[in-house]
Image (cartoon, rainbow over all chains, first blue to last red; front, side, top):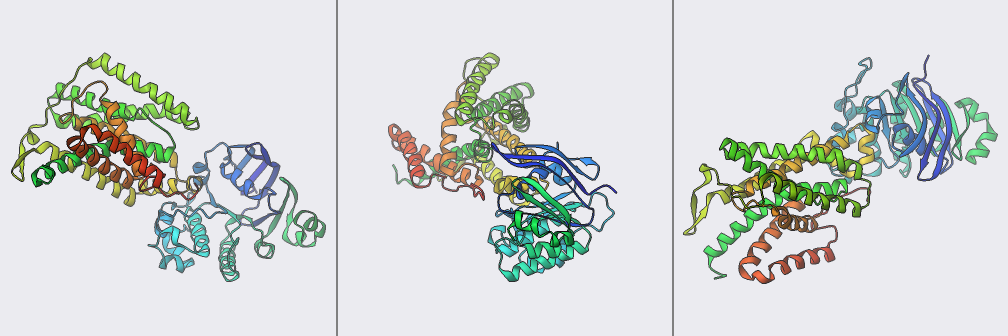
Length: 237
Length: 293
């Protein structure tokens, strides 16, 4: 079976800084893969490189069997990648409803049940209440929910989620985790960057460990729990 | 004289009429400057081109309205070529190189116009429907000028609703807020901005045709109004639609009243207005909101 996403020898730069150095991995279809590493290890940069958002990068990225590493970012997104940036990227000039509808697209393959505005509002009742409010007036948790909802409405095959619980109050973190657990059960493929390791490991089927721009370890979640040396060396926990 | 209501009313209308033209011209300039970080000094050339293409169309078809409809399209096409050939390549260039390149284009435009249409002044007749005049507080006032005012208001409303209520408008606002995220969720921001750019060029062309019956058409008509339009953009705030409208209104009024009250100081007052805005609100009166600088 082909992997949902294949990344081969991926390199990414910020100006002259070689932040991602020859990283290769595969994401299993329908699984949640956690990408872990210390601050500055290059986790967010990998997501940006996959999305085509870096000015300078090299390597091969394939969604299923389709190469996407030559496409501009909006075409990468349209090919089936949903991206939730660390900054959440909510558009303050757009209302909550507009933030959602601007990104909404029917599912490309038609096999799965499409995410619709109604389904997204079922999942996030809070957003339904706030639909006419400007995107700039949301709390951090609401912004995160909106960012997730917006990515779902893109009806991609795969979600790249960058630090969804960062900077949120514990109760809100629990809410977001519940939503992510729901999504996991729905069978969507996820690449999750998360600094909150307990949350990440409860969600993850597989784990990738990144250190100083290189992939240091890859395996399933139970194996990661017993790989104490990996955790100590590369995560410091 | 200053307190005579008739005089005030007439000058107010003249001010609005100039503001309307300046608004049509400034929208495109402001969009390119504010959204695409490109300083396009040749925007006035598009205005002049609109006037001359309008002139030729009127001569060929004897219909002002045909020129009114087609000249903006022709100018938009010229703008599209300009975007592909120059703007896209120079987007990352330093402001100085952009200024030099587009400043050069002004002269290319001037000489092209001289070559094609000759080095003299032309007048465009107002269409028959609007050729008459109306009574304003006992004074006759050309109907055509009221039409120009109305046109500016209509275009402002169309742009406002286009930006607030259409999908293209939402994509543009998203692209202005956070371009990286907008592209990463599948929005073709570049194409949306390109369409907006072409629309801005069409409006410059429209301003040129519409100005025909009010101001005369001559090589260099672009320079004098370009300076006013640049002041509009700086005063209003680059990239902001409301800013362009407010800036056009202020500049139109200051210029009009300045010219009749104290002609020798008119431009001084205008530049003082700009300097004041730059000191107090460097981003313009209605700066465009940006989430990431």
